[in-house]
Length: 298
Ligand code: DTR
Ligand code: ZN
Ligand code: ZN
Image (cartoon, rainbow, N blue to C red; front, side, top):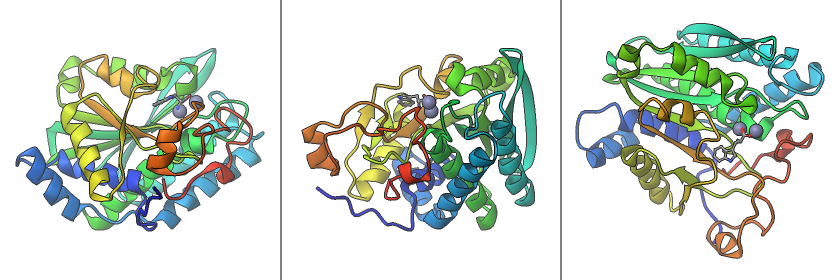
């Protein structure tokens, strides 16, 4: 079954707004999702694609990658920070050291909302050293960036406080997000309503997977995809393998989306989603993970 997903809406990024909206209301989950659905701003695909083009250019200009400790990573952080500063976010670059080199997390707070009820969306911004890392994880980074910019364009003022994060050194073991969580005082951790993770969400032979962690977040995502006529499966491959694990490990509700890595899509999944019985992303952790390694519909 081929999917007819609105091309203008980048589903994952729109879902970020929905999930943030869904988690920011006070009504029940269903009415929250419905009202948030109405409130979710359009996330222009062209804008997300431009961010991916810009991240590719950064990698190309910096030895072909955006890996921890390499110039391409810091250039990626500076690129994302500049757009958020211009949009009115309060940004913080958090430094940490790993393998003898300095790493960076970027945290962006949208002013307003209840500081005791924080909804956060994040993505790791680093690539492996073998390539530009456009699907892994420029896709998540660009989607979260464009969702944050859409919030600013809409002047969105949810009841909860919105925070966005871009993590360093995820590929070396969730290093940046672990550092961020470990630096959070316990009192601050208890203020999180949820953390939403986006790591590989534009895979060229996509599946549509929803993390099966927090049930409210999982339902919010599943309901939205169902509203688009897109069947989903629960994500089990990534347990512990991306930055949501850092938050889950300290008791913060987590959720997220994933379109697949090196595993092979089954024939049943091809019937469900289209594509081929090959890897969801044959360029996982490879030099071919470039802007040509992205499925726009996903
Ligand atoms: N994105 C990969 C980690 C990874 C592999 N499978 C999953 C599933 C769900 C989330 C993440 C992952 C990486 O950063 O290497
Ligand atoms: Zn990743
Ligand atoms: Zn990776």
